[in-house]
Image (cartoon, helix red, strand yellow):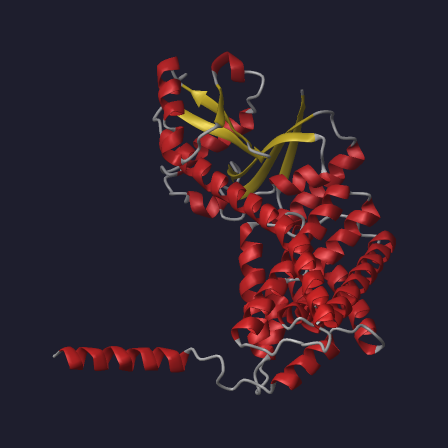
Length: 445
């Protein structure tokens, strides 16, 4: 019986080892090194390909076309030098590390210059959603870059080449952040510029790390020198370069992870702890920066007693929100903050779940399904807007008894926009929300 169990275990181990064996179909090591080294250089054709890809990606971001952006990423040669750096680190080839790093810097510089020129001369200067999505990295960008890099180097070490490399180029999205950095430079928007560069750095670094890990796993031969002193010096230089690059990235990636965890925990906390019948949260702001965490809530309805508020604050630890400041504004403290359109939006669900005055049910999901979260876009494009509400409303025509859906946008502003700016905001909203009927209202402080 024991022997049979051992045989089964051995069979399972052999099956798994064979299925996941990366040495099967592995290309000749010298061919892999030569191919990656060749793709690490930007001279002649690859350089022009990069410039054209940057222009295409910039146009795609400018007109908010996902298909065009994907096309640009497919023809982009940016993966080459990044994988070259990872391969050089994994094989102690300092010359390849220097060549890959030099060409990556050249490619980055040319890409930013090309996109800056494009965005400077284009008549379309509005930041669309595709562009805004590349201004702030998230933990998902780290995961995608790392796993995409793993897939890319595995594909590069196979004898049979497949369509994995183009897929990796799309998934890791190296091109759009550089174009976004060019947009930020052209518009003088430094948060856009540095945020996009940060995203590009995160993507490049984790592709490089994943390349190094697979190269070492496949046990590529390390470069040896006749002079042991030279070999020791090269190894030391590579180690210093890796540490200088990786240590800051670990800190930055940790910050991204912590922020994502905080936001998820905060959302759960608000949803579960503020589930009252006669009190509603009509506005929430989550702030996380350098260890300072704050949840800012605006309530309407029956005012919560001090005991209830203290009990809620005491539950912060249960949601792993230790050290978080909970700011609750209600009653007189909230009177200056309340936007009546926010109140309307908050109670619309209860109203429209019931039959309307004509007896036909109106489904709230159909009314709200086309309303995305546009907070980050409004902050970037229209800084004079301090808060806003957005809702779809049913308009009953008394003359024909027909019903239309109209979108209502109400904003509290630091100063009232000029008529020209109101037209600009209205035009952007209609395009962003993809609606035909839109009413906009502004209230000054």
